[in-house]
Length: 251
Image 1 (cartoon, one colour):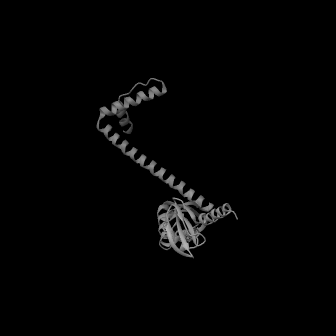
Image 2 (cartoon, rainbow, N blue to C red; image 1 turned 120 degrees about the horizontal axis):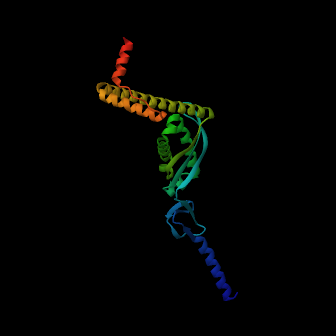
Image 3 (spheres, rainbow, N blue to C red; image 1 turned 120 degrees about the vertical axis):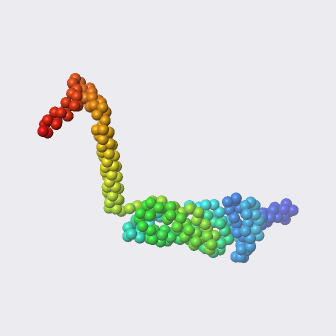
């Protein structure tokens, strides 16, 4: 064989040894290097070299991932069947535990989120689910973190209940209840207005009764308003004559 052939074979052999030893870890990843099945080191972002055919590198994505919990039928504490779905935002905070302590941390986190959703909503009333959803979200996050962060190195940063679907019959009942509540508030407001108006009228009547001049001026003003509305002329009659005439009728 010629020297050129030996050089080419040497280059090929070098490439066969060099290429499998090169690993690139992205900025958002961490690399775990296993040698003969045993964890040897944790590598950061950049160009990394391992022993080919001996070492194996597993890359772990450290970014926030989104997990959608499919709609589930849940019975609340007050025996109302609702359909609820949720979304979980989680991320790996310890790559070593996420790979060694659990086979598939994303699937395992999803199952924990599913069972936790059913458990927490089963202990909550429908009113709490509809009006205090932030409290339920906090409870869900705390329970999921308790099961995933310490043993698996997975942290649930945000847990949100998205949609709550109620039975049609319950929706109609709640609509009637809301309508009745609005009518109740409208009647109360109307009654309060009538009460305030009657108080104001009584005070005005007392004021006019205590001041004959004010009563006479109000009488004349009323006559002017009537005349302008009906486009006619009205001759005012003094109130003293009207009072004497009324007294004569009573006698």
